[in-house]
Image (tube, rainbow, N blue to C red; front, side):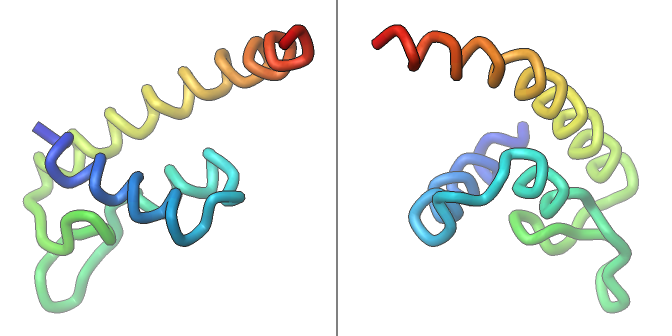
Length: 80
């Protein structure tokens, strides 16, 4: 389950950097090598290779949803 790490990070980022582009936000959560702990990201500093794969799969799916949703979102907001 990635939610306990993902949603607090999303909330904190929304508070501190509300204008960050969605793709940039997601890229910042991609697991990277951590010299002292193997792999990690800002939401979960230490993780196994299988956990890193879960994060990558999750972030790829969120990126796809974001690409599909934003054009619709901007069209709908113009109607309001």
